[in-house]
Image 1 (cartoon, rainbow, N blue to C red):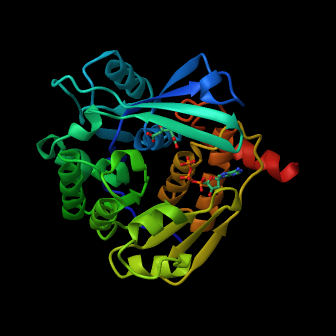
Image 2 (spheres, helix red, strand yellow):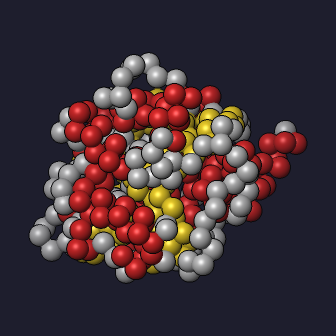
Image 3 (cartoon, helix red, strand yellow):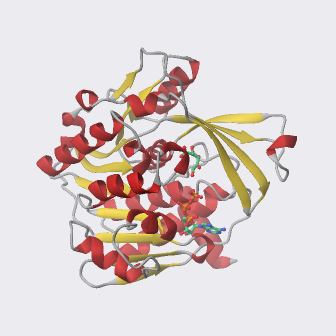
Length: 331
Ligand SMILES: Nc1ncnc2c1ncn2[C@@H]1O[C@H](COP(=O)(O)OP(=O)(O)OP(=O)(O)O)[C@@H](O)[C@H]1O
Ligand SMILES: O=C(O)C[C@@H](O)[C@H](O)C(=O)CO
Protein backbone atom coordinates (compact mmCIF):
# COMPACT_ATOMS: atom_id res chain seq x y z
CA UNK A 1 0.00 0.00 0.00
CA UNK A 2 1.62 3.22 -1.11
CA UNK A 3 0.16 5.59 1.45
CA UNK A 4 -2.95 6.77 3.26
CA UNK A 5 -4.84 9.93 2.19
CA UNK A 6 -5.40 12.55 4.88
CA UNK A 7 -7.43 15.76 4.43
CA UNK A 8 -4.75 18.39 3.85
CA UNK A 9 -7.41 21.10 4.19
CA UNK A 10 -7.63 20.56 7.95
CA UNK A 11 -5.55 23.03 9.98
CA UNK A 12 -4.33 20.55 12.61
CA UNK A 13 -2.56 17.25 12.13
CA UNK A 14 -3.56 15.24 15.18
CA UNK A 15 -5.91 15.07 18.14
CA UNK A 16 -5.97 12.28 20.74
CA UNK A 17 -8.70 11.36 23.20
CA UNK A 18 -8.16 9.37 26.39
CA UNK A 19 -6.11 9.29 29.53
CA UNK A 20 -3.61 11.77 30.85
CA UNK A 21 -1.75 10.12 33.69
CA UNK A 22 1.50 10.09 35.59
CA UNK A 23 4.28 7.54 35.18
CA UNK A 24 6.42 6.91 38.25
CA UNK A 25 9.36 4.99 36.86
CA UNK A 26 11.60 3.12 39.26
CA UNK A 27 15.03 4.71 39.64
CA UNK A 28 16.57 1.62 41.21
CA UNK A 29 16.16 -0.67 38.22
CA UNK A 30 16.90 -4.34 37.59
CA UNK A 31 15.24 -5.29 40.84
CA UNK A 32 11.62 -5.87 42.03
CA UNK A 33 9.61 -2.84 43.07
CA UNK A 34 9.66 -4.10 46.65
CA UNK A 35 13.28 -2.98 46.64
CA UNK A 36 12.69 0.30 44.82
CA UNK A 37 12.81 3.37 47.01
CA UNK A 38 12.65 6.26 44.53
CA UNK A 39 10.81 7.03 41.31
CA UNK A 40 10.99 9.69 38.60
CA UNK A 41 7.76 11.40 37.61
CA UNK A 42 6.78 11.75 33.94
CA UNK A 43 3.57 12.50 32.11
CA UNK A 44 2.06 9.21 30.99
CA UNK A 45 -0.97 7.51 29.60
CA UNK A 46 -0.69 5.82 26.22
CA UNK A 47 -2.63 8.45 24.19
CA UNK A 48 -0.75 11.23 25.98
CA UNK A 49 2.57 9.59 25.10
CA UNK A 50 1.57 9.27 21.45
CA UNK A 51 0.31 12.87 21.33
CA UNK A 52 3.55 14.10 22.89
CA UNK A 53 5.46 11.99 20.39
CA UNK A 54 3.55 13.50 17.45
CA UNK A 55 4.21 17.00 18.74
CA UNK A 56 7.91 16.20 19.28
CA UNK A 57 7.98 15.15 15.61
CA UNK A 58 6.72 18.58 14.60
CA UNK A 59 3.06 17.76 14.08
CA UNK A 60 0.35 20.17 15.31
CA UNK A 61 -1.45 18.28 18.06
CA UNK A 62 -4.31 18.65 20.52
CA UNK A 63 -5.74 16.53 23.33
CA UNK A 64 -9.29 15.80 24.47
CA UNK A 65 -9.39 14.55 28.03
CA UNK A 66 -9.91 15.31 31.71
CA UNK A 67 -7.36 15.89 34.46
CA UNK A 68 -7.67 15.94 38.23
CA UNK A 69 -7.95 19.24 40.09
CA UNK A 70 -4.64 18.71 41.85
CA UNK A 71 -0.91 19.20 41.47
CA UNK A 72 -0.63 16.22 39.10
CA UNK A 73 -3.36 17.57 36.85
CA UNK A 74 -1.68 20.97 36.74
CA UNK A 75 1.70 19.34 36.04
CA UNK A 76 0.22 17.43 33.12
CA UNK A 77 -1.48 20.48 31.62
CA UNK A 78 1.73 22.53 31.86
CA UNK A 79 3.78 19.73 30.29
CA UNK A 80 1.40 19.50 27.34
CA UNK A 81 1.56 23.27 26.84
CA UNK A 82 5.34 23.26 27.15
CA UNK A 83 5.34 20.67 24.36
CA UNK A 84 3.15 22.76 22.08
CA UNK A 85 0.00 20.69 22.50
CA UNK A 86 -3.39 22.43 22.33
CA UNK A 87 -5.11 21.90 25.70
CA UNK A 88 -8.44 23.68 25.16
CA UNK A 89 -10.02 20.23 24.89
CA UNK A 90 -8.78 19.18 28.34
CA UNK A 91 -11.21 19.84 31.19
CA UNK A 92 -10.47 19.74 34.90
CA UNK A 93 -12.53 17.51 37.14
CA UNK A 94 -14.24 19.18 40.12
CA UNK A 95 -15.55 16.06 41.87
CA UNK A 96 -12.35 15.13 43.69
CA UNK A 97 -11.28 12.47 41.21
CA UNK A 98 -7.57 11.69 41.05
CA UNK A 99 -4.83 11.22 38.47
CA UNK A 100 -4.07 7.70 37.30
CA UNK A 101 -0.64 6.57 38.45
CA UNK A 102 1.51 4.01 36.66
CA UNK A 103 4.27 2.70 38.92
CA UNK A 104 6.72 0.92 36.64
CA UNK A 105 8.79 -2.02 37.79
CA UNK A 106 11.96 -2.74 35.84
CA UNK A 107 13.16 -6.13 37.06
CA UNK A 108 15.30 -6.51 33.97
CA UNK A 109 15.29 -5.01 30.47
CA UNK A 110 12.90 -7.74 29.35
CA UNK A 111 10.93 -8.16 32.57
CA UNK A 112 9.01 -4.94 33.16
CA UNK A 113 5.54 -4.45 34.55
CA UNK A 114 3.25 -1.66 35.57
CA UNK A 115 1.42 -1.31 38.88
CA UNK A 116 -1.59 0.83 38.08
CA UNK A 117 -3.49 2.97 40.58
CA UNK A 118 -6.66 3.88 38.71
CA UNK A 119 -9.53 4.03 41.19
CA UNK A 120 -11.71 7.12 40.72
CA UNK A 121 -9.50 8.54 37.98
CA UNK A 122 -10.43 11.83 36.33
CA UNK A 123 -9.70 10.61 32.80
CA UNK A 124 -12.64 8.19 32.78
CA UNK A 125 -15.00 11.02 33.84
CA UNK A 126 -14.70 12.81 30.49
CA UNK A 127 -18.31 13.40 29.44
CA UNK A 128 -19.76 13.47 25.90
CA UNK A 129 -20.67 17.14 26.22
CA UNK A 130 -17.01 17.88 26.93
CA UNK A 131 -15.84 16.52 23.58
CA UNK A 132 -15.00 19.49 21.38
CA UNK A 133 -16.38 18.73 17.92
CA UNK A 134 -14.38 21.56 16.36
CA UNK A 135 -11.08 20.06 17.57
CA UNK A 136 -11.93 16.81 15.80
CA UNK A 137 -13.34 18.51 12.70
CA UNK A 138 -10.13 20.53 12.38
CA UNK A 139 -7.74 17.58 12.71
CA UNK A 140 -6.53 15.17 10.03
CA UNK A 141 -6.37 12.32 12.54
CA UNK A 142 -8.25 11.37 15.71
CA UNK A 143 -6.43 8.84 17.86
CA UNK A 144 -8.68 6.72 20.07
CA UNK A 145 -6.97 4.76 22.82
CA UNK A 146 -8.99 1.70 23.86
CA UNK A 147 -8.83 2.15 27.61
CA UNK A 148 -11.00 5.27 27.32
CA UNK A 149 -13.87 2.89 26.48
CA UNK A 150 -13.53 1.10 29.83
CA UNK A 151 -16.08 3.10 31.80
CA UNK A 152 -18.88 5.64 31.39
CA UNK A 153 -19.02 8.56 30.74
CA UNK A 154 -15.63 8.37 28.98
CA UNK A 155 -17.04 5.45 26.95
CA UNK A 156 -19.85 7.59 25.54
CA UNK A 157 -17.45 10.50 25.01
CA UNK A 158 -15.30 8.32 22.78
CA UNK A 159 -18.28 6.99 20.83
CA UNK A 160 -19.40 10.58 20.23
CA UNK A 161 -15.87 11.54 19.14
CA UNK A 162 -16.02 8.71 16.61
CA UNK A 163 -19.29 10.11 15.26
CA UNK A 164 -17.73 13.57 14.95
CA UNK A 165 -14.73 12.12 13.11
CA UNK A 166 -16.95 10.33 10.61
CA UNK A 167 -19.10 13.44 10.15
CA UNK A 168 -16.05 15.62 9.36
CA UNK A 169 -13.88 13.21 7.39
CA UNK A 170 -11.25 12.93 10.13
CA UNK A 171 -9.24 9.69 9.88
CA UNK A 172 -9.65 7.49 12.94
CA UNK A 173 -6.69 5.59 14.36
CA UNK A 174 -7.70 3.03 16.98
CA UNK A 175 -4.83 1.99 19.23
CA UNK A 176 -6.33 -0.97 21.07
CA UNK A 177 -4.27 -0.33 24.21
CA UNK A 178 -5.62 -3.18 26.37
CA UNK A 179 -5.03 -2.53 30.07
CA UNK A 180 -6.99 -5.17 32.04
CA UNK A 181 -7.13 -3.25 35.35
CA UNK A 182 -9.64 -0.73 33.91
CA UNK A 183 -12.18 -3.28 32.63
CA UNK A 184 -14.93 -5.24 34.40
CA UNK A 185 -14.54 -8.30 32.16
CA UNK A 186 -12.95 -9.49 28.89
CA UNK A 187 -16.44 -9.81 27.42
CA UNK A 188 -17.21 -6.15 28.09
CA UNK A 189 -13.85 -5.20 26.64
CA UNK A 190 -14.47 -7.08 23.40
CA UNK A 191 -17.91 -5.54 22.93
CA UNK A 192 -16.75 -1.95 23.34
CA UNK A 193 -13.50 -2.45 21.43
CA UNK A 194 -15.58 -3.75 18.56
CA UNK A 195 -17.74 -0.62 18.54
CA UNK A 196 -14.59 1.47 18.05
CA UNK A 197 -12.68 -0.83 15.71
CA UNK A 198 -15.52 -1.11 13.22
CA UNK A 199 -15.51 2.71 12.84
CA UNK A 200 -11.73 3.04 12.48
CA UNK A 201 -9.57 3.60 9.41
CA UNK A 202 -6.32 2.36 10.96
CA UNK A 203 -6.18 -0.20 13.77
CA UNK A 204 -2.99 -0.85 15.73
CA UNK A 205 -2.54 -3.51 18.38
CA UNK A 206 -0.55 -6.45 19.56
CA UNK A 207 -1.63 -10.00 18.69
CA UNK A 208 -2.97 -10.40 22.23
CA UNK A 209 -4.98 -7.18 21.94
CA UNK A 210 -6.55 -8.30 18.66
CA UNK A 211 -7.38 -11.67 20.25
CA UNK A 212 -9.13 -9.74 23.02
CA UNK A 213 -10.97 -7.58 20.48
CA UNK A 214 -12.03 -10.58 18.39
CA UNK A 215 -13.15 -12.68 21.36
CA UNK A 216 -16.63 -13.28 19.94
CA UNK A 217 -15.53 -13.63 16.31
CA UNK A 218 -14.67 -17.33 16.42
CA UNK A 219 -11.45 -19.34 16.03
CA UNK A 220 -9.34 -18.24 18.97
CA UNK A 221 -5.98 -18.84 17.28
CA UNK A 222 -6.59 -16.36 14.49
CA UNK A 223 -3.80 -15.47 12.04
CA UNK A 224 -2.71 -11.88 11.52
CA UNK A 225 -4.00 -12.08 7.94
CA UNK A 226 -7.43 -13.25 9.09
CA UNK A 227 -7.53 -10.45 11.62
CA UNK A 228 -6.80 -7.87 8.95
CA UNK A 229 -9.37 -9.33 6.57
CA UNK A 230 -12.06 -9.02 9.22
CA UNK A 231 -11.46 -5.29 9.72
CA UNK A 232 -11.24 -4.54 6.00
CA UNK A 233 -14.84 -5.69 6.00
CA UNK A 234 -15.65 -2.65 8.18
CA UNK A 235 -13.88 0.65 7.54
CA UNK A 236 -10.21 -0.21 8.04
CA UNK A 237 -7.72 0.67 5.31
CA UNK A 238 -4.71 -0.46 7.34
CA UNK A 239 -4.29 -3.01 10.13
CA UNK A 240 -1.01 -3.12 12.05
CA UNK A 241 -0.12 -5.99 14.38
CA UNK A 242 2.82 -5.48 16.71
CA UNK A 243 5.00 -8.41 17.78
CA UNK A 244 7.50 -6.92 20.20
CA UNK A 245 11.11 -7.77 19.39
CA UNK A 246 9.84 -9.81 16.44
CA UNK A 247 8.78 -6.54 14.83
CA UNK A 248 5.45 -5.76 13.27
CA UNK A 249 3.31 -6.53 10.24
CA UNK A 250 0.91 -4.23 8.40
CA UNK A 251 -1.83 -5.24 6.01
CA UNK A 252 -3.41 -2.88 3.49
CA UNK A 253 -6.96 -3.14 2.21
CA UNK A 254 -5.42 -3.34 -1.28
CA UNK A 255 -4.03 -6.76 -0.41
CA UNK A 256 -0.52 -5.52 0.38
CA UNK A 257 1.42 -6.58 3.45
CA UNK A 258 4.60 -5.19 4.98
CA UNK A 259 6.89 -6.66 7.61
CA UNK A 260 8.53 -4.19 9.95
CA UNK A 261 11.92 -5.13 11.31
CA UNK A 262 13.29 -3.84 14.59
CA UNK A 263 16.32 -1.64 15.17
CA UNK A 264 18.94 -2.64 17.71
CA UNK A 265 18.39 -1.15 21.14
CA UNK A 266 20.19 -1.00 24.47
CA UNK A 267 16.94 -1.85 26.24
CA UNK A 268 16.36 -0.31 29.65
CA UNK A 269 12.63 -1.10 29.73
CA UNK A 270 10.26 -2.45 27.12
CA UNK A 271 7.16 -0.38 27.84
CA UNK A 272 6.75 2.73 25.76
CA UNK A 273 7.60 0.74 22.65
CA UNK A 274 4.03 0.73 21.42
CA UNK A 275 3.40 4.43 21.95
CA UNK A 276 6.65 5.55 20.35
CA UNK A 277 6.13 3.12 17.47
CA UNK A 278 2.66 4.56 16.90
CA UNK A 279 3.95 8.14 16.92
CA UNK A 280 6.76 7.43 14.44
CA UNK A 281 4.55 5.28 12.24
CA UNK A 282 1.68 7.79 12.08
CA UNK A 283 4.14 10.61 11.46
CA UNK A 284 5.47 8.76 8.43
CA UNK A 285 2.01 8.07 7.05
CA UNK A 286 1.07 11.74 7.48
CA UNK A 287 4.16 12.77 5.47
CA UNK A 288 2.79 10.62 2.63
CA UNK A 289 5.49 7.99 3.08
CA UNK A 290 4.96 4.36 2.18
CA UNK A 291 3.69 2.00 4.86
CA UNK A 292 7.04 0.20 4.92
CA UNK A 293 9.06 3.38 5.44
CA UNK A 294 6.61 4.54 8.11
CA UNK A 295 6.95 1.24 9.95
CA UNK A 296 10.75 1.58 9.97
CA UNK A 297 10.42 5.11 11.36
CA UNK A 298 8.11 3.83 14.07
CA UNK A 299 10.43 0.95 14.92
CA UNK A 300 13.43 3.26 15.25
CA UNK A 301 11.34 5.57 17.44
CA UNK A 302 10.50 2.59 19.64
CA UNK A 303 14.13 1.53 19.95
CA UNK A 304 15.05 5.02 21.13
CA UNK A 305 12.33 5.06 23.80
CA UNK A 306 12.95 1.56 25.16
CA UNK A 307 16.61 2.54 25.49
CA UNK A 308 15.51 5.42 27.74
CA UNK A 309 14.16 5.63 31.29
CA UNK A 310 10.98 7.47 30.39
CA UNK A 311 8.30 7.25 27.72
CA UNK A 312 6.97 10.77 27.19
CA UNK A 313 10.22 12.63 27.91
CA UNK A 314 12.14 10.28 25.61
CA UNK A 315 9.84 10.66 22.60
CA UNK A 316 12.32 11.52 19.82
CA UNK A 317 12.51 14.26 17.22
CA UNK A 318 12.67 13.57 13.49
CA UNK A 319 16.40 14.23 13.54
CA UNK A 320 17.00 11.82 16.39
CA UNK A 321 15.14 9.06 14.57
CA UNK A 322 16.95 9.76 11.29
CA UNK A 323 20.32 9.72 13.07
CA UNK A 324 19.38 6.48 14.84
CA UNK A 325 18.46 4.80 11.58
CA UNK A 326 21.67 5.98 9.93
CA UNK A 327 23.81 4.85 12.85
CA UNK A 328 22.11 1.44 12.82
CA UNK A 329 22.83 1.07 9.10
CA UNK A 330 26.52 1.84 9.66
CA UNK A 331 26.80 -0.41 12.72
N1 LIG B 1 13.14 -5.46 22.42
C1 LIG B 1 12.91 -4.68 21.34
N2 LIG B 1 13.94 -4.29 20.56
C2 LIG B 1 13.74 -3.48 19.48
N3 LIG B 1 12.51 -3.04 19.10
C3 LIG B 1 11.44 -3.40 19.86
C4 LIG B 1 11.57 -4.24 21.01
N4 LIG B 1 10.34 -4.43 21.55
C5 LIG B 1 9.47 -3.74 20.77
N5 LIG B 1 10.13 -3.13 19.74
C6 LIG B 1 9.53 -2.33 18.67
O1 LIG B 1 8.37 -1.66 19.16
C7 LIG B 1 7.21 -2.10 18.46
C8 LIG B 1 6.04 -2.18 19.42
O2 LIG B 1 6.41 -3.00 20.50
P1 LIG B 1 5.34 -4.02 21.15
O3 LIG B 1 4.95 -5.01 20.13
O4 LIG B 1 5.95 -4.50 22.42
O5 LIG B 1 4.07 -3.08 21.40
P2 LIG B 1 3.31 -2.83 22.79
O6 LIG B 1 3.09 -4.10 23.51
O7 LIG B 1 2.13 -2.00 22.45
O8 LIG B 1 4.38 -1.95 23.55
P3 LIG B 1 4.28 -1.43 25.10
O9 LIG B 1 5.21 -2.33 25.83
O10 LIG B 1 4.72 -0.02 25.04
O11 LIG B 1 2.84 -1.60 25.51
C9 LIG B 1 7.61 -3.46 17.86
O12 LIG B 1 6.80 -3.74 16.73
C10 LIG B 1 9.06 -3.22 17.51
O13 LIG B 1 9.15 -2.50 16.29
O1 LIG C 1 -0.60 3.81 29.35
C1 LIG C 1 -0.47 3.85 30.58
O2 LIG C 1 -1.36 4.15 31.41
C2 LIG C 1 0.94 3.55 31.06
C3 LIG C 1 1.88 4.50 30.32
O3 LIG C 1 1.83 5.77 30.94
C4 LIG C 1 3.31 3.98 30.32
O4 LIG C 1 4.17 4.99 29.85
C5 LIG C 1 3.34 2.80 29.38
O5 LIG C 1 3.11 1.68 29.76
C6 LIG C 1 3.58 3.10 27.95
O6 LIG C 1 3.46 1.91 27.20
